[in-house]
Structure formats: C-alpha cells, structure tokens
Image 1 (cartoon, each protein chain N blue to C red):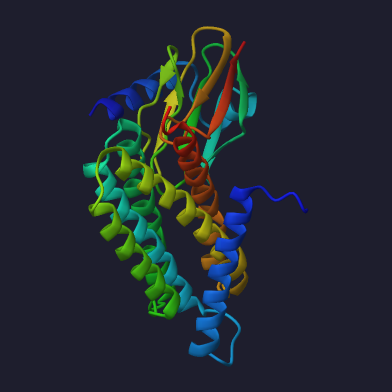
Image 2: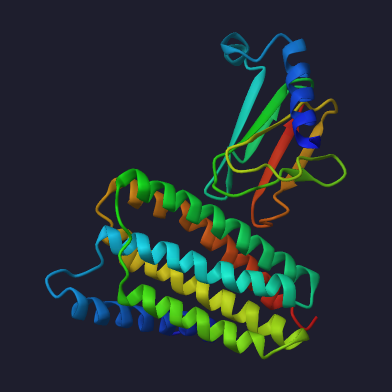
Length: 109
Length: 184
C-alpha cells in the first residue's frame, strides 16, 4: 500500500512537471537507472532539481535505493519501478541495503 | 603465481575438486559428450538454488546474529527469485529438467550441510553457516564458469546464467564480509 501510494505520488509530480513522455525524455527531464545483474546502470546519474529519476528493477529479486538520511525506496520488487524527484541539490551516495556491494551516486544540481 | 594465499588456494582446491567431480560423473553418465546438456543444466541450476534456499531458511530461524539471519532471509528471497525465472524459462523452452549426478551431489551436499548445521547453535551455527555459504557460492560460481555456461546450448539459458552470475558474486562478497566480521 505504502509503496504504491509513493509510486503514484512520484508519477503525479512527474506529470505536473510537464509529463515524462517521449518529449520530456528528449529534453532530458526524465532519467532511468536500470537495476540488473546486481548493479545500478548507470552507476552515477546527474539530474537537475525537480527532475524525476526512475529506478527499474530488472533482477528477479528485490533491491533498494537507499541514501541514509536523504531517500529510501524500501524494497523494489522484481520487475517494479521506483521513482524519486529530488528537491535539494547535492551528491548522494546510495546503496542497496539488501546487497551492500551495490553502490550508486545521484548528483542533483 | 607462487604466492597463493591460503584462502585462494582453498578456493582453487575446491574448484578443482568440483571440476574433477563433475567431469568424472559426466564422463560416466554421458560418455559421448564432454559436459551436461541443457536439460541437465536447468536441473543443476534449480537444485543449486534450492539447496541454498533450504540453508537460508534454517539460518533465518536458527541464526544467532541479526546480520546472519538477514543474510539467510536474503538467500531465500534471491534464490527463490532466480528459480522462478529459471522455471519460467524452462517452461517457455519446453525443456524438461533432467536429474543428473551433479544435481545429486549438490543435493547430498546440501542435506549434509543441513544435518551439520542442525546440530549447532549460537555462534557456532553462525560461523558454520557463513563459512559454508562462502565455500558454496564459490563452488557454484566456478561450476557456472567452467561447466554450465560453456556447455549451455540454448542462448536464452546461457543468457540467464550470465545474468544471475553477478548475484552469486554479490552473495559471495557479502558472505565474506560477514565471515571477516565474525568474532569482532
């Protein structure tokens, strides 16, 4: 329940910002990080404040996107996507709490 | 090359042992071919995952430290996920997993491990479980690299093996971290 509510919320925010369709992707306002083979791809993603980042889990088991004190996806189930729209500039190192060897960085300008 | 660390030589010895076992049994089971066929590979994959799921379930309930319990839980979740994907692929490809001596040996090894673990408790259980997880994941990765991936004929089966390999590596690294932290 919580996760779907958060997902819907992220979607609403993204749509409010001009949609995340093809046009938005072309202008670079939507970003995707693919989680596959126990890795974030790309490992580092740079976005502007208010832009939405989607983490798509293509592994057959859950992962998380967790930057302590900043954001936490909780478990993203296999095949699911978690979206986040950062509002504060900064460099956020994040990990998967389930697989601590997985590391990524979100840079917000 | 001549400065093998004990850990490394242990892993090499394990890998060599497994290779000898697998090549030995396959030479017996299928003298015409060098390695397992796709139906046997599918069976090995499912068995290898199931063995670790069973050990993980035991660690979830019998583990002493929270991080050991959490690791066991993750093993159950991840290997169940991999098996779901493997089973779906096998059904799609209409391959009937075929029992074989490697699967048998994995199953037997898993049963022996459970028996051993059930007799232990507290810190001794945690140590034995994590030590076994390190050795087991190393063994499975070596089998993937030397036997399963090179012998897989179907491209989708091969792709699945390649895709899930990093998960086994991540589990191995995680188990090694827990191993190193033990006793601290």
